[in-house]
Image (tube, rainbow, N blue to C red):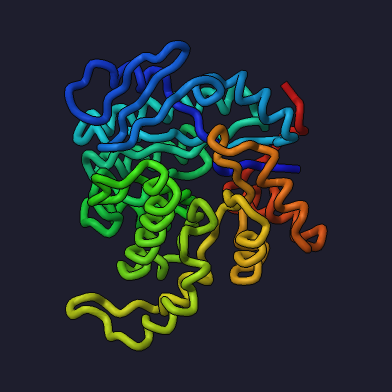
Length: 330
């Protein structure tokens, strides 16, 4: 069984809403799809299969993927700000829930949160879990420049952690990214910003609540700097006024989950050595990544059969409470 926890689907209604805006984010029609202008220097083309459920399903069947947990790509609804952000987050959540209900066992959804109003965002989080049945929450590494330990953001994440729901931490354009080439932003700045977001949450004490945080793209740079981060968390005293954490940074990183969106066997093997199979969840980043490549890389790893099953499906079933249908089921 294969469950893809990192698979994108864009809301066409949202892209249509972005057309004609005079400030980012904006979108324009482009032949059979759209070009979304997400940030200065970052514009992304969107065509099938990211716009079309049937095209995505066909790619899944070709790759033997049983279930995909769908998440909205950039720009996220939070970038609209205020009431609009909350409205569009809820609307996209309704769309994802309807898609999952229409294809039981083939699709699940990562909920979106607008972070326009704190109480409304917490209420939407509860609605996603209690009424829509979504699998967890996609949270960006920063919210249009706001860090995740911001007083208007952290209480939402604490609430999600207390509910026992999973967070898929996805990279976003980092503050100060102006002037970066798109390839540099996507290839390096994105995973670096994810890493900083995790460390901010550690410093804010979120990991004392035992959250389920799945950091995208092999956890950014964190597996490679785990020992260094752990060393300095002991060597440098905390900032004045911050409450002491019950766990060191190194202990918190030991509790982090990652998805397997990587592009070589060696990084996957290193993450396995650092974190173990029970902390890794299969993901493809479809349609940006070819669905067959990540699972081919996992097949090449020196894993036991139970470990391979954990990574490909078991961890997702356990953490996201998922049930998948056999591959190829319409």
